[in-house]
Image (cartoon, rainbow, N blue to C red):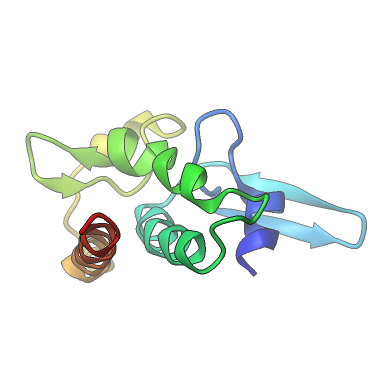
Length: 124
């Protein structure tokens, strides 16, 4: 599933996974190229796990983990200490209020804690 997402829904230029699309037998059509904060948070964790499980895979999960740009530069706010709804690279209006019914700190915290612990283990 991770490989399919990388093949069909990964932004090769800026990094990150697109929000949605339609799968057809011979292609995929991206219908919303914004990058939802939730997808990017879960992607960080998943890509790092895949990099540890398959370090020699030609997909190069670790490089994708490091280049998940929307999460680090386009989704998080340094002044308000929270993540925008979507990446500013595709949705500049995402700087609106970030608190809403679907935005809870669970995904961000869980992803960052898991990544920090996994990276610490790797470098000990």
